[in-house]
Image (cartoon, rainbow, N blue to C red; front, side):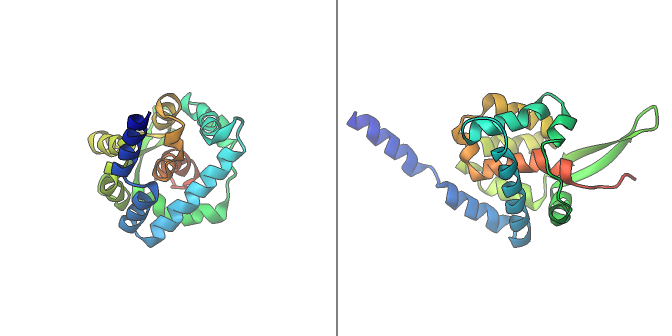
Length: 190
């Protein structure tokens, strides 16, 4: 039993504290973007608190389920659109994402997004990727593919995240950016 306790204490002593990682992340991001991202994450957390379930992780999985199955409208109906906050997030959105529009055969334009791999957001995440394997995997995926998107990140969170992963403040920021920000951002069609 003592050996087991020693092993646990050693593991925690070697891994960076979430608050230290968040502080380093915010310093790399810059003050304005860090504040906007904190507001976005707070909004994300408030939306999740209204979801069904016991505990934050269970509520978060329930909140993300419609998005994971491509039910965008059902997901969006859970979101309280606040113009004042959205205006604050536009700069954050354009710093993180790059938008393009694809015109379909019937003349409708579809908004597509990719993550800007050289953005301050990705640079800040890269600086803390040693804090958590999910952060490292996210950064690697962005660098290799250009983006994940709301559906894939939601599906991954529902099926692969442990309850503890949902408590990590940087993972919550990634989820808020990937799932909430694209739905709240207003980028006019070209």
